Length: 39
Image (cartoon, rainbow, N blue to C red; front, side):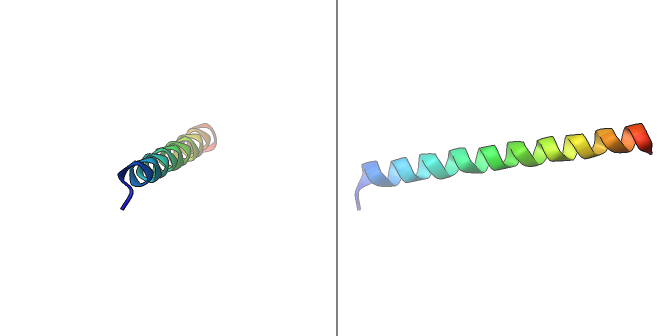
C-alpha cells in the first residue's frame, strides 16, 4: 500500500464530499427562500 497515494485519494474524496454537501446546502437554502417568498 502506497501511503502517499492513499492519502491523496482520501484528500480528494474528502474535498468532493465537502463540495457536494455545500452544494446540497445551497439548494436547500434556495428552496426555503422560495417557500418564504411564495408560501
